[in-house]
Length: 323
Image 1 (cartoon, rainbow, N blue to C red):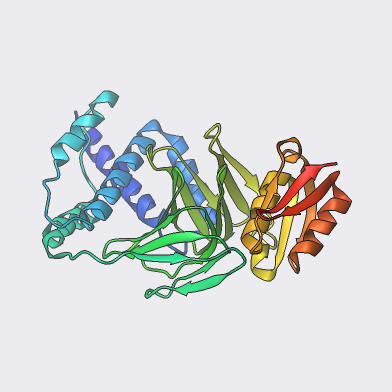
Image 2: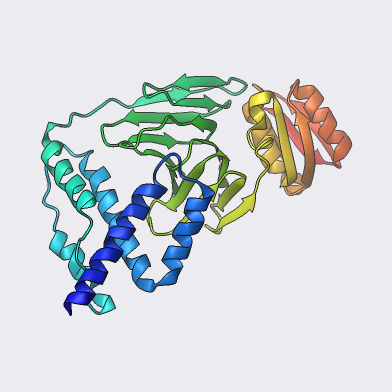
């Protein structure tokens, strides 16, 4: 490799490191994402350098959560770049320094407790975290929070919540939900986890949603966008979303655009104390409109007027059947 090629690789690596840092800043904008995308698409070498820089960033976060200092084989990381015809140099001093600092600090890190929060059906709750972030939980939800030194980690089970995340450049805010991980680059978003799918809607700022098992598989969302990942086919479908209705449940409303009745029933089971189920022959009926969540009987009555269904009440709750 010539000296000019080495210098060019170093410049690309430094640019990649700068983009990684910028895209993880809480004040990142859609213009930043557009500029970063243009830079990545300009040269295949840019994308490979960006992946290397992201790998180093992830290593910093992982090291910060360990109780002992592991050996990070940086030479092996460079070796993996041979597939593209040359040795890649780690030419981002700030990133390398961060990794070194994490190795030094790791032995002094102490484990922190995991806090578990739950709400009953029909109950909502706002959780204030010690970093200033807030989580507004819908009914029938369960999640855990671990405020580690190197990251803030939330794990969601069957749940729905709105997150308003405080800025902390040194501790990324991560949400593990279903088979996905949400990384906060912006500040406010709604997550809905049901038995069938995970949905993330961005209300303000920017977030990144990736596959827990395959981190390179990811989508980046800005305000007014949502991603739905269905468990059945594992696709990540990005769609526009109305920020005025994406978290309307916090104001006692639900807005739907051609959604199946089984999904609406699951939402009503969160909103009210009496469970709502759907008979198989009615589960795929579609509904569009806004439901006021004022009273369970009133809400079900409105659905009966809009859809060819009838509600049967029994000891196990309410069952919606096709009429």
